Length: 384
Image (cartoon, rainbow, N blue to C red; front, top):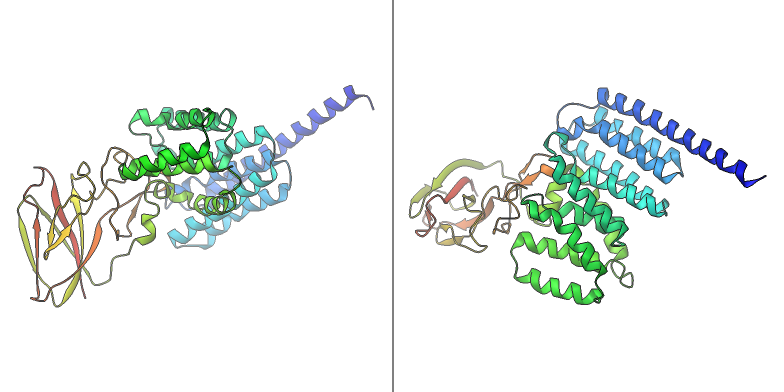
């Protein structure tokens, strides 16, 4: 058969595939709109997620049944799982499995770019109502530059995109800086070593950027990081319903503790030099945080709890609007209290401090040298 006759046939075949996947995505998105509960922004974004999974299937061009079944599986948690965290985690696992499979079977350059765009949309564009479009578009362009110009694989590219702060605006250049570093005629190990030293002395919000940059530059070096990094990437990608937590509160969230049923709310805010006393039977766990304390350096003593220094951070410093400019770090034992969803999710960074009170009285005082508007907040006390 002449070559000239093959090209129209191939074009017609591709056009047919586009039409089939487009019809499938539209039907499934409409169905998911009516099936999904309206309880959370993740549930309300389910049609958007269905479209992304369908697009993964079209890009992969192989095993279409897998992606169609994955899209259908998203309906099961929406219908049968009432518990919010379990339902959202089920969404995350299904979408992560579909994305990872598409990444594994699609081996052409344009597929890597398209899947990177899909990954960024899933990680950063939910909740849709809170997307700042022009900032997110710059991050998207930076991710595409990393794949096309920097030659980076989609997995580390998505890690870079996920951790890129959108506040302040100058940090939107982070992916472009990484791309330039990848093109420099400098050994990758030397770049990684330099940023390891810099990250060790930098504040927490900069340190995590240094860590993800090190992972990116070492990704293909003798395949040292590939297997464990891919496994970790898939596991973390499954948490996209709380991608803001992965970006800003990992691994601190692993050490977080939920409040005890014995917890008693206190909600006392102490200004510089003020003291508060509470009667306790034997020992207690105090949940404390700082207010207007995001500019205080890590390790700064905010007050004392029965003689024990309290260097708790500002309660909301992990909000994406404040995170990069903050000088705080997560407490050793944070409170397991997650706010919001998707890229906007953040960890309430109150610290849990266990103290013994032999005199059955707990004395709490704020440091006398606190800035004027900074306060030590005692949120709750758990009696043991």
